[in-house]
Length: 136
Image 1 (spheres, one colour):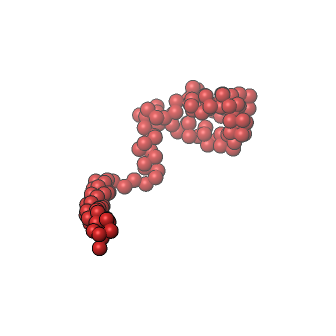
Image 2 (cartoon, rainbow, N blue to C red; image 1 turned 30 degrees about the horizontal axis):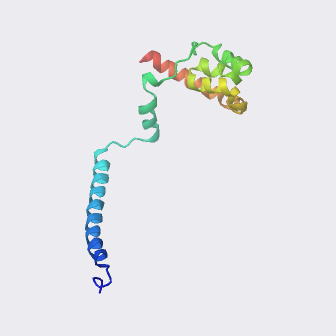
Image 3 (cartoon, one colour; image 1 turned 120 degrees about the vertical axis):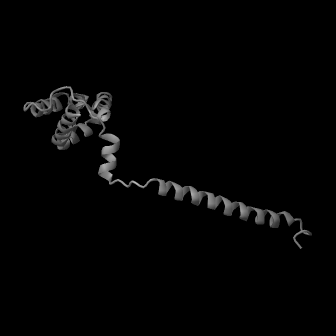
């Protein structure tokens, strides 16, 4: 009946497509299984972060000695007077963000004001990074 109506090709193609689909599914499953079993090391988020970003060359390099007790006050003064231009970010070693602040006036002052809430954490992180950089 299908040959008479001119649809004989549908039955042949559907049979060959099913076998091709099954073969491609098996290949995809094998690839996924191999990728999963090869990565036997499972890291927590913190370990993965440290492995990728806390390497020596990726640490931010501040322009001042952050171990100095006056560094916190210096960063806060820079935030107040030059923060909308990225001055505090540049001194902390965040050069990319500093350039962004410079051309967008602190991302239209919103990011500059937001930095007021996280600046102490940025200072602490920069101190830790500088300490790691000196000791490694």
